[in-house]
Every structure is written in C-alpha cells, then in structure tokens.
Image (cartoon, rainbow, N blue to C red):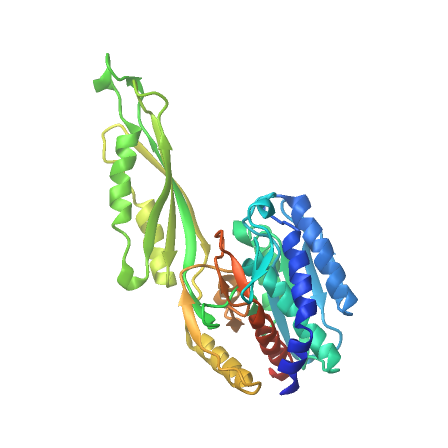
Amino acid sequence: MTSLPGACRAHLPEALALLKQLVAIESPSTDKDAVDRCVDFVEAAFRDLGLATHRLPVAAAGDQLTADWPGGDPQAGRTLVLLHLDTVWPLGTLERMPIREEGGRLHGPGAYDMKASVAIAWLAARAMLDLRQTPRRSVRLLFTSDEELGSDASVELIRSEARRSDLVLVMEMALPNGELKTARKGVGDFKVVAHGRSSHAGGNHERGVNAIEELARQVLALQKLTDYARGTTINVGVIGGGSRSNVVPDRAEMTVDFRVATMAEADRITQAFHALRPALPGARIEVSGGLNRPPMERNATMVATFEKARRIAAGIGLQLEEGSTGGGSDGNFTAALGVPTLDGLGAQGDGAHALHEHVVIDSLAQRAALLAALWTEWD
C-alpha cells in the first residue's frame, strides 16, 4: 500500500504526456468521427498495458469502449469504473485554448472534464504493473462518448454494467479541495410550448391570442417553483416565438432546466409542469420532457461507501473528504440503482466548460494512487 504513491509519482511524466496527447485529440460530443479518434487512442493505450479491450459500435454517438484488468477474482466482487471521452468543446478550440503547462497546471479544452481521469486510470494501472500488484476483485473500465449530451446512447449500457457490479467508481472531477462527491442533484428539462391565434397587430389585434404573452405568464409561475431550502432550482434558459412585430404570434416556446436534491422533489416538479393550464382564453399549453438523471442522494449506502473509501485512503496517507454539487454525472444512474457509488475520483483543477479549464498536475499522481488503492484493498 505505502509504495503506491511513490510508483504513481515515478510514472507521472508518462501520464502527463498521455494527457497532453488526449487533449490534442479534440472530441466534441456531437462529432462522432472526432470522438471515435479519441476512442482509438485510448483503446491502444490500455491495450498496451495488457488490459483486454472491447469496442462497442454506436451509430448515434461515438463508440463505447471497455477495458478489463487481467486477473482479479470475480468471486470477490466486481468494480465498474466510469469515464467519458467526449467534451463540450467544438473542433478548432485548440487554436484559442492551446495546451500549455504553467505553474504546476495543465491548461487545455477537456483537460479537466475529463481527460485527466483517463490519464489517472492509466497511471494507476501502470503503477500497479510496476509493483506487480493485481486488483483484489474483477475490474472493468467503461469509456462512454455522450455524457455531455445526457448519456442517452450509453445509459442502458451503464445501468446494465452497474447491475453486474457491487461498486462503481465515477471518474468525474474532484471538488476544489479533492473532496469526493457524495450527493448530486437530479437534472432534467422541460419544453413548454404556448399556442395562440395569429392576427394582424393593427387591423385585427382583438382577434388574436398572443402566445408570447401566454408563455410570459407561465414563465413567472414556473420560476416560483424554485425552493433553495429544498435544493430545487428552476431556470427558464431559452425562449423564443413570433415572426414579425406586426403579427400577433400564434406560437412561443421555452426550454426549462430543473435541478432537484431528492426524488420527492422530482415528482413535485414534474407534477407542477404537467398541471400547467393556459392563462389566456383561447390559448393552449403543450409540455414535454422530464427528469434525465435521478438525484444521487446521500443515503446510508452512500455514507458507508464513502467511509470505507476514507479508511483505504488513510492507508496511503491521503485524507479524504466529501461534498456535494448541483451538477449531474453518470453516477446518478448507478446510485439510483442502489449500487454503492463513489463519484469525483478525477483530478483537482478548475474551469470545466470554461476558457480557463485546467488540472493540477500533481493531483494526477495522488488520485491514481487512491484509485489503485481502491482496486487493491476494497473487499
């Protein structure tokens, strides 16, 4: 156990070089060819370590990839490690956000969210091979390619793999001070369309039913559903409607993001959206959408799972803390199944989805040592 941190530090330069190569392969979620190039690279990197890789072709998104650690006792349990290879950054972003190393940080699009996690998993495996250690249990790494879009193409595979596992390690970024994430809000969105009746804004104004006015009334009602005490937020983020200023608009629509801390709140918000009724005579309301990721609640299973991880971390000299976030991850899906889940095992850094995105380079070795310890010590 005590030699893991040293082995990870020794191979940190290799892992950093790997990370730079990964960031250089731009992989926006919406570009299948680009994401598949990243899958090619990752498949080769883990195969070279001796892991057994298997590629799953996907038509609607980038391909998915599994990598299985040789050895490990399936009878002792199965650990699933979740990573994603897609980013929010379009092709060409490297021209305005070039890869650079500065002040102990590596900057670049997708470095923090979450290509550093791929380098961490690679480094953990590399260090264990150097020490001739093998996981106590069966370990499968699952690399998906559409997490930033909501994981529609990968969610069933994630759930299927999680049901066959008794521990899920989610390699999303750590909280600012390295804390794991033991609670995440559930995430969803609704589309609300207001239908009215068009007419000439000058000659027949009274005959029209203004869909934008109807939608505006609904916006005010929906925003009031926000309840900070319950951890519930409603955000009307996109709105549009109408054609010309001299036409009473017959259609307007909005897209609404909502975040909830509990399934009870998810049910309350869903019921409220479907209970919307028109405020103007002659108008009609249409609602679609719902919860995309269930909340990851800090329940008894989560508490026990984190405490076990804390003890293992202490064995290699790491002090592990916990926290929560309003964002969702694929860990939301696995925790909702009742499978013990640890989230936020990725690198420390800042700037996910922002121009200052970066990772703290030294954290790569620390997190790799933690991941390797979880593989070798969890029973």
